[in-house]
Length: 175
Image (cartoon, rainbow, N blue to C red; front, top):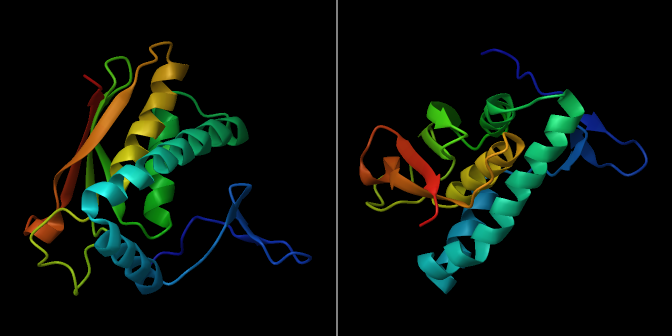
């Protein structure tokens, strides 16, 4: 297996981990998923999604803006870097199927989602909805930078937990 291309810097005084000059927290996948699904179970999937979406959107937008500054990236390269880093951080393998920042559209494939595990792969429902606002926020940054700002929405079209080979997301302008 190839070594990851992500360098982790640990501040010896604080113990904080940094990747791409941004602070990180490393937790086991089962720990994160157990908490995620427990909160979803308590709130219901729709309420949980509604509560998470604004923070996920903002986090992706800010991350893209900061990474564009750190690495001098522009346009689709910022979005591609975001997909690469999400993939390298264990969320699954994200790939861009199609993207048009002027139109504000994208199709994103996700293989090996961190939410679709041996325990959840037969759930028969979409489990990866948390990623949708991340994709919208990231692409909104790119659209704005391209001089075509617009409000976007993203949705999980299919999920591997429903029996598909991979998850698929679509991003488009809000109605």
